[in-house]
Image (cartoon, rainbow, N blue to C red; front, side, top):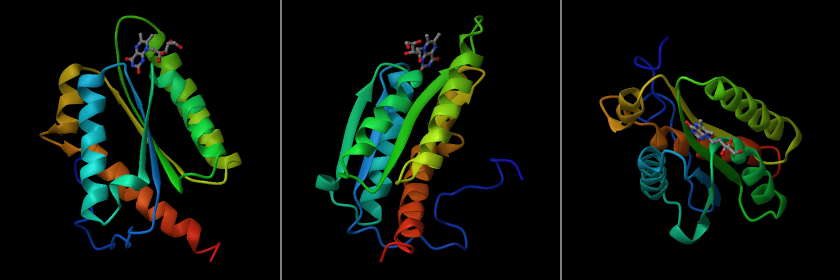
Length: 164
Ligand code: DLZ
């Protein structure tokens, strides 16, 4: 099923758990901030919709997507948050940078999920054009930031099943 047919926006048949006591970190890139800031706002609005307190959301900036892994790893160390969303946007250009950054970041975030103790949500938009990025950051295809927030809530709820 393609992402145009399936969405994690909370409107489907799988309920979103209560998030009142959850604490979240969001690490967001300066690169393509005209897109990443919109994804950030989408995530924050959705957190608010599901009861997350503003004081329980920590936002940190890193320069580019490649720095997301380090940024999330640092934030995860101190036990201040229950899950982290890594938000970045890589737009395919004429250089091999696109593939290296996508691959390196994806691998880094995957390793954090395997070896760390809290979930790290993959909020990396990897797109061919500016237009595709706009479509996913509040445009025709909605705001993916909202889906990242719902995923983070569901993953904290999942993790808590084993802790409480
Ligand atoms: C260098 C670079 C390029 C070409 N493109 C992007 C991009 O589209 N999105 C993004 O988030 N970051 C990009 N970067 C920066 C790298 O992620 C990284 O910040 C630098 O290579 C320094 O490590």
